[in-house]
Amino acid sequence: MSWSSDQEAILERLRVNCVNMSTQHKQSYFFYKKSVKYMRLPTIMLSSIGSVSSVGLTNYLHQNHISALTCALALIVSILNSIELFLRLSETCEMENECSKAYYAIGVHIQKTLMLQRSHRPMEGSIYLEKKYSEYMVLVEKSNMLSGSIKDRMMELPKSPSKLKNLIKKKNSNSSSSSSSSGNSVESPLPKEEDMETQL
Image (tube, rainbow, N blue to C red; front, side):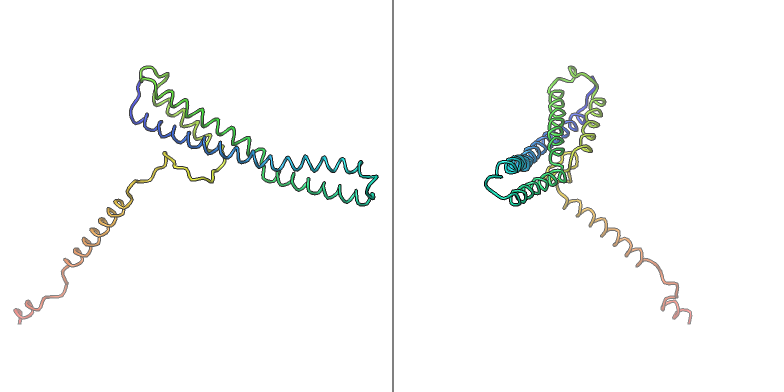
């Protein structure tokens, strides 16, 4: 099997990205799961209280008061359900769970392949790299944006941007100096004073 060190380096960066993304999506999953719990439990409790009070409080309260109470409870329940539907908490929770597992599966598969000797790996390096990279990109397009700061190993910036700035400054200074020197070297079309005196 033909493998190269640069293919292994790209796969290692891809694996680190998958581990980080799996961790972040896992945290998001538990956050949305907790949010769903805080929406569902009050809805269940208020719905139960409303259904019991509409029948069990007839001997203690006037029917007008019972109707107002059940109406208020139903309004609160409908508001909570509307908020949950608007935020799509259940769908987002399930999507975060699926994305976390999918990133984890890609990372584990890459780790297993890289730990094998090159002669024992199941396919060519270029084919395996393209396969895992395409799976990773499909998952990136499918998953939600994450609010946390994640260091993307596939999009790293230069470690010393000051050196790049210094090179740009040197190029600009060289170009300006060359242009100024070329401008100073242009001869005037008018005759010099010494030539005029000699002619006279």
